[in-house]
Image (cartoon, rainbow, N blue to C red; front, top):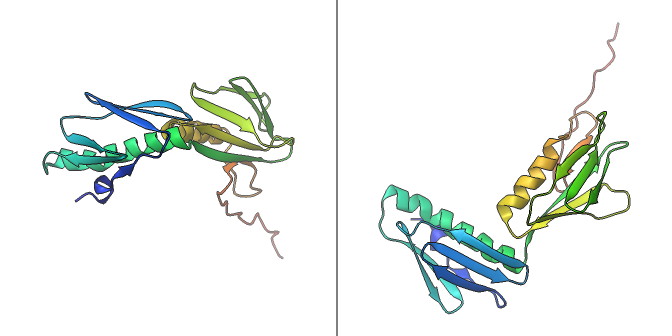
Length: 183
């Protein structure tokens, strides 16, 4: 029994949800999003402001997709209502970044600046003048997470000084360096 799949999705006020064939269209104050689901395994019932996701049978594939599609549709509803964001911190001497339109430029200690084109539907904003804290936001949870992970992958936090790009809530355990040999 899928515990996640059996939970109903409450649709908040200001968000509209329509089901056409095997596509769920969600529109809200943050934007619109379409989520495709497999109507061969999953059935959707909209009762007022509650969406119930159920499966047709107890086959392995149906059980596997039950919780998956419920989570994807719930994320689409939450993204259109509130949105998703990941906060990153750039830590290190001379490490900083800037945004010009949909282009992100990072100085991370390499001999050249890193230029990254931010995909459609995702926004990157620096929070302060020191250009060390940036927020990746959008309505698609998958896109926001993958863009944040891609930016972090340019210079992951190293364990000796903690320099690099990290999530704000990420803990990096600092290792002890080499100790002098005693005679």
